[in-house]
Image (cartoon, rainbow, N blue to C red):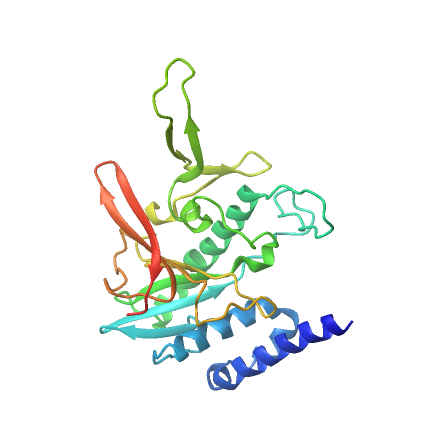
Length: 279
């Protein structure tokens, strides 16, 4: 019991510390909604406070995206979302993770479907409304910031990372070995343009290359939550810029964590993974 109390005590202390900085930016419903939507609202608070403590001047319009900053004269909006496991009883729902010592497969395809659903909801339904009301301008950059910790299996990422599997038509890593000769094996990643739902319906991956998605400037992923907060501001961030964005992120814009440098090649795109430094 003592360990559990220590655990929850640290989480409460973290939330109170974040709230001290976040309160001036919170909407009037925040304290009511955080009781029923704790993970979603915690991520919104953590993202806003992290950007503020990194030295950015943040703005949080009501209504509008969760938080905005300006980098080299470019306005960048971030909309935070925490994908759920899916509708209860749905055959495509991400199953609950078990912590009883038994072996359980990681439902990677179902998890990426939840990423795609959240991206679609924010970009196709909310973003156009903000354009219409003037909360967001066409010349502003727009980033969807996902926190998939609610999915239950996000204690480890995949190769390639799930953020890449959602943003580009890329799938699992493979190795091809010919038994007929001793040539070095061929390695790479599958081309995967869609994922099949349980019903057989296909959901396109590669959102960066979708028609109409050029206004999506990038994706940000973090798995932080109140009980597994990472030491260091934004230390677990994964920032992926859209190489075909109509309003790209500033070339030198970086956040702590991992930055995926994307460049065009003759037959697609090359993505280099590296540690990021805030600039």
